[in-house]
Image 1 (tube, rainbow, N blue to C red):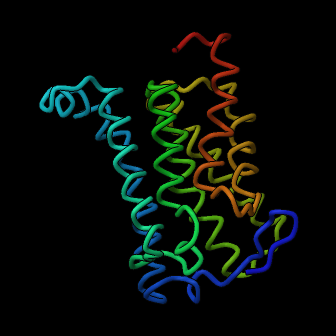
Image 2: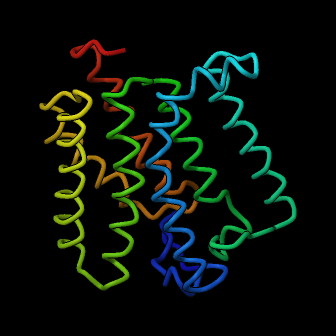
Length: 210
């Protein structure tokens, strides 16, 4: 894969996916299914944690650590599963990076007002941008359409869970920009969570939700 100063060249996601088109569709379906994680966390998290004798942050940490242990084994044997990209045989996968990003968000900003828009921006915004690029939209169009889509997500969260309205013109473009770097050493599943999460943590002293 081409690389320039740590930047990874754009590739055809279908050609790179194990399983071809069906693998690509499966990968997108997994990405979209991340949208249900906040619902599971807020509705059933405490009950699940209590059932196995942990508190909720401990349960989140345990899940992330188990996923990282499985990822280490996968990398040890250079395994790619259905839907993964060929290059993920030799580097940390998008799924593992997503687990790290989402896990840290739940540990550091575990409120509905923050978690819902952060996770939905990743689970819906990232595949949208990928598909727009695959359809050969130019960069400006991808930026505009994805920022509009993420703005709608944050507006919906303002309406449904009380996300502060004034965050939207800041966070929507920030979430979009956070997907843009094509870095070899970290996947955009992580940057789309961690960069907006850092912004939330900086803004929260003025909001007081944490």
